[in-house]
Every structure is written in C-alpha cells, then in structure tokens.
Image (cartoon, helix red, strand yellow):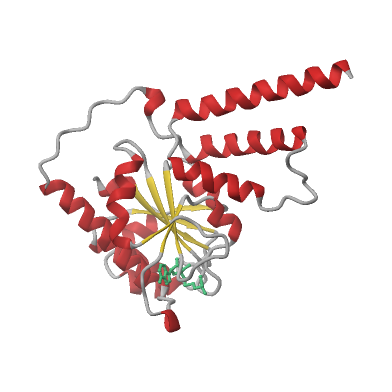
Length: 251
Ligand code: SAH
C-alpha cells in the first residue's frame, strides 16, 4: 500500500488552525495529498503556525468547490463520522482500513473525507462515500477535534503501509482495463443513468423518492464494481430505455 494513493479531503473546514493541524498530522504519517472543499480563509498566521513544518501540504492543497470534484479520480471514497446515521451505511473501524484498501485494488486512488467542525458531513456528501469509518470513541462524548481525527486515521494508513512493506506478498498481477475498479466519476454517471431510467419506467416517483437512490447506492457500493461491470449495468439501462421508447412510439 502506497501512502501516495491516499488523499485526505476536508469539507468546509471553518477554522484555519484545524487545517494547519490536520496538515501536520498527515505529514507525520507520510501523507501529502490534501484536498480542501470550500475552506475558510486559511492562508493565515494561525494556520501556518499550527502546520509547523507541514506548510508544503497547505501550499500544494487542491482547493475545489464540491466533494464530487475532490473525489472524481478516486476508486474508493471513505467518509468519517462521530456518530451513526439513520440509513445505516457500511461502517468500519479504523483498523479495518487494510481490508478496504485491498478491495480498492493496487491502481486506485483512495479518499478519506472529513466533515465540518459543527455539523460533520451532509447526507448528500455521505451518499458519495461507500463506507463510513467511525473512531470508536465513548458514546457520551464521541466527537473528536477534526485534526485529532485526521491524526488517528493518518496513523492507520501509515500502519497499513508499513505492514504492506514488510509482508512477503506476491506482486499483484497486472489487470485488464475492464477489471480496474470503477472511478467515482464513472459510478456517478451510472447512478444518473439508473435514476433517469427508474423515473422513465415509473419505478421512481420524483415527487416521492422514498430514499430509493440512497438505497440503490448503498447496494451497488457494497459490491465494489469494476469498469466492465459498470458498462454491463449501463448496457442494461440503455436497453430498457430503448424498450420504453419503442412502447411510447407505438402507443
Ligand atoms: N457534530 C458533528 C461532529 C463533527 S466533528 C457530527 O456529529 O458529525 C468534525 C469531523 O471530525 C467529523 O465530520 C469527522 O470527519 C471527524 N470526526 C470527529 N470525531 C470522529 C470519530 N469519532 N470518528 C471518525 N471521525 C470523527
């Protein structure tokens, strides 16, 4: 496991000091890929003071205006949360990172996403994550400072990478392009296609969506789709749409 494959994404962090402290936490664990989604004004004295030696991560950070843009090149997106959500998402503990990383394949990029200091990640943002990692803090006081959460999870990434270095594992065989894990962007196109087809068949009522799309996402995300499997589902959706068009034109 190469730590260069892992990107940490901070969503709408409102305190520059936290961004600086997160950069420092990452750098101590060999991580350098930092993305900031709509950050506060962070080029301040406090941010750089708290980064204390990790200024390069701040200077090279990717700044974007949506989580989707930050994770477009990733094959695995893992959200983080201090608490359980209503729609139970596949949830892992930090020590289970290694299993998730293996499933992402050797070529994919992995994102670990951190939420706002006050309100965490929105349900729409969580929908982009296929798993949720929860640091098992005490239930009565479960919320860590964001930079502390970054430190814990950066350490877990480091632990996995050190294990991989020492393990006597065979080099993975080169995969055919279709066998590569689908990127987040490819999956998003598939979900859009699925949603519009479900609306066209009448299965999904946009006025009363009944959490159908989050449930579909949860189902597909659990499978860890590769590129050719995405094509398979999109082929099916295309054929359904052709059938609907035929019915509509003969009606
Ligand atoms: N009230 C918010 C807390 C946000 S804390 C909520 O309930 O979600 C800010 C961020 O730090 C969280 O979005 C998450 O990314 C991270 N974090 C804090 N405590 C955590 C924990 N116990 N496990 C995993 N991530 C945590």
